[in-house]
Length: 230
Image (cartoon, rainbow, N blue to C red; front, side, top):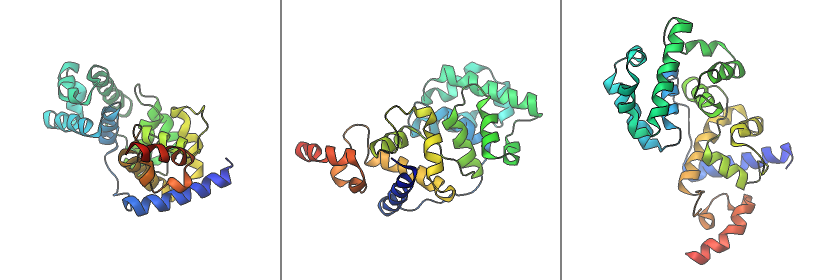
């Protein structure tokens, strides 16, 4: 698919998703350390479980300095509900300690002085932070015009033919970001995730009732089978 055609397709997708799921607006800046820790907790688990782990962590420790000084086992107990706690707890503590050592305090406000590319590179230096996590921090905490790609977005854009079959999930943002207008990236991100959770699911996608069906070759092929099963 040519870039011009992909851009047109994505503009149509955004219009249809707005109509189906409502508009999304960036609510304003958030503490980037909060977002970083919350996003690490969200890796390989559900939104509800990751939110519960973050809430318990902040109830137990009043500041990020206290988390940095805590025993790994104490952090792990707080975030166990988020899954993979034995991996996530030492990573979170190591990142907080590294920030304090390198910057003189636990904060990420310095990222705002960088462009998205340099800020992303700075975050990728931390163990356990991949492209999706780094880009989520820049988007949700600072409103930078980046485009993180999660499993829902990867699945939907592949079904729409926007990504080649050989595309790696970790590099999908490199293909998709320049195809979406900077002002639309935040909203497109959230709407694709909402659509993936409600309609374009990994299993049993609701193709017959999908608002993107006229644009989706996968949906056109799958819709008759879905109707036959219902």
